[in-house]
Image (tube, rainbow, N blue to C red; front, top):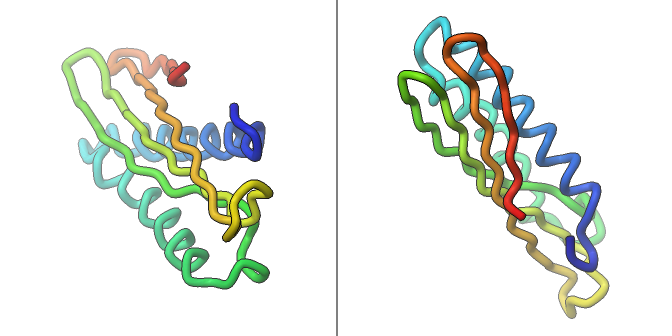
Length: 121
């Protein structure tokens, strides 16, 4: 991690991924995993859009915007994530804005729904 970012962003990323995995597992029966994950993404983008427009003092100090890419294979559903963690009150930034980008991947086996989560090192 880097100065001004850390456990908060890691916890947020894992919560987002878990929410997307739950949505994907529910949709697996319907065959529309991409749409289910998009619904989770829309919620986070909507919040981030609102926070981006707020002034520094009234918005949350930290929030996250993410993009998910779904790859469906016969054996796995792969969810690749790009997370933009925004800090609006970063001590080393003149205007307070700072960005930390992380990349994650989750695999869900189609046979037994075994889940593995990977984080970019």
